[in-house]
Image (cartoon, rainbow over all chains, first blue to last red; front, side, top):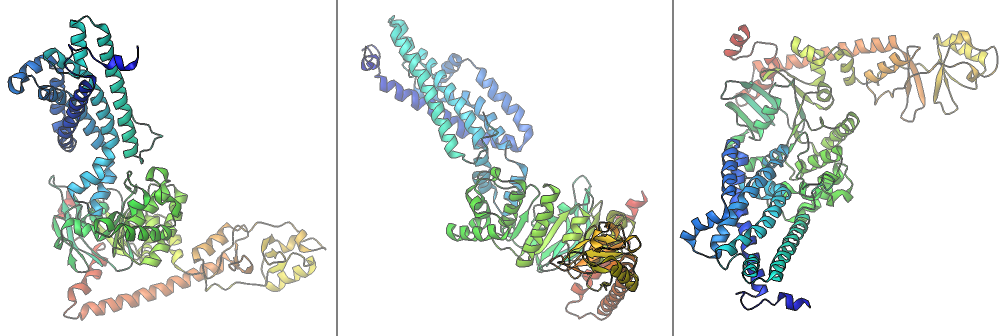
Length: 219
Length: 421
């Protein structure tokens, strides 16, 4: 069996392999990015006002514990059976990983560095973007990696509610048509994709933070 | 010139960190704020660049209230060095140093050239420019901290225990180099430390603060050691302030005796004659280059042969008249088992010897001279107070007010009450 035939999907699968890959990447990476954009201000606020953190952490954890099917059913009323429904659900789940990541990251900024930044004459916005965020980056990136992998695998559940869920659709159609090789292809693709994303993000993190002391290795 | 005018910092819970602090840090000089922890010295420093805002009073730099400008703009015009350097870990050394010039809009190339000059000034290898802070030792990081503070050439520098976090040997090196750099740049520096030795070593003026942020004394190091304003200052200075004060007296005036200095190849009998004619109980034996070898007792010399064969007693260390202080001379005499100090020139060649007693009388003479000088200065100050120029009356009053603040009760109404409770 040559490789091309594995990736040529039977006609009863409504997407091409590349179409599934595109959907998978778009939704899972997009949701992580969306989650990150929401987490940054929330995390910053939690790091600044310490009292805020426990309730916020409780809230995102509760959100994470909502069964995904229930969440889909709830969201379908508003966004229908679309990628948007998946996107919102995955972004919400990613908060549980990303918000603590951002808070921990901001807390890694040494107090004397913040003091020095103030004393040098940085304004609050400049200090945030040029000093705090870059220093928090390694910790935040570690959380982003976990969130990305988690989104990629969580997304398959979308196949249950319709022709969504990227490679997850290979599981549902494969099971319906008793085509086990489709299921294996889906599983293989997901694992490889998740590993690849993790490696690429790790590489990006290294390039972004050449200053990090590798001797005290971070997660 | 940085002037504190009755500056008070009171926190909402009623704690008074700084209480009616008034003094003036002169231009181009190092003014040290020193005191035990909780005396408000760091708070005072941070009020200058408005990291902390005073509750009452006014701080002015060259007569302009620090509140006249937006805080960020003010801070860019004031260098700031802190204990753990506080370098930006995500930026290279050169980018750390260029921080303030870049904030001020200097182009990258100009800023980098300046950074390289500064690295040279603070004694950093230019090869370190592209490194990150974690790759540097604590001492090197602190040098980068100083370079970063100097980058925009600010007239004023604030330093908050900059040398406390490094080991004593590195600290000593950094202090000496700091004095050398200050000799070149002549900034107006406000320097905070809890270490009185550091204060005396670095300060042109010293403000001693006591708990509750009250100024105990504001004086030059010499005067502080000579006339502590009260028991607190005296205790804070420690039991060896008399010895330490000798640091400020030069040893140039000491009259060294050459008579008891004899070469090692001198025959013993003529050496004994030399001791007799010099009238000293000891002979200093030197080698052919006139470097000291040790002391010999004339009474226990061998009957013949060169005197170098005699048993010699160690001389401790020598001092260099002119460049060393009376303290170094006295230390040399105290360390020497014979009680005599050896004076050498810069190359280590013996100039002569002097006894503890002679150094003692030189110390008494120096004390007498400095107290006459002080009296004369006080008379002059009193005369200036009595007939002030109408225009500069306020300014002329300030230093003397600060000087006397410690010896009299603080002018605040609350302080005596607090003490009574």
